[in-house]
Image (tube, rainbow, N blue to C red; front, top):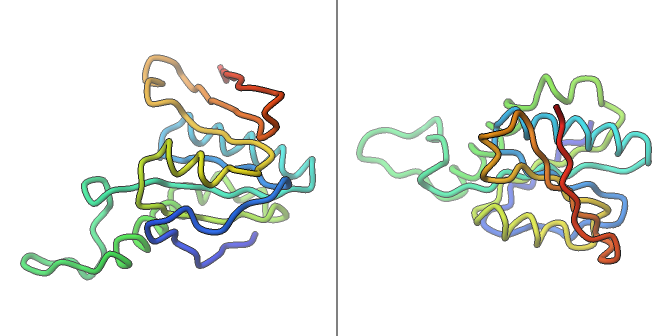
Length: 155
C-alpha cells in the first residue's frame, strides 16, 4: 500500500489521472462502504485510490502538542487530520495492500475539494451530506462527462 506524505495543506494537491478513483471519507459507515467499493474497483482495473478528508479548524482533531494557551500551526492540524484518516480506515484497507492508496487532508469544503481533486479521475465516490436517512449511500460521478452522475445505494 502506498501512503504518501502529502497532507493537502489547504489545497487539493497534485492532479490525478484516469487510473485514479477519488473517495471522500468523513468517517461514516457509508464512506467506509464507498472506500471498499473503490478499492475493489481499483484492484480490478489496475488503478489507484486517492482518499480525501476535507476539514476546517472547527472539525479538526487537536494535534498531539495542543495545550491550553498554545495554538498549533496550520500544518500540525493538517497532519493530525491526515493521520486520523489513516487510523479511521486502517481495518478497511488491510486486504488491499496491492492497491496504491494516497491519503489527503484538504482544508476546504468537501464538495469543492472533491470536485477539484477528481478532475481527470476515473471516478469520484462520496457520501452525500443528507445520507443520515439511509444505511449507506454513495454519489458516484464518472470523470467522463458523457456518463453523467449516478447514485448508487449499498444496502
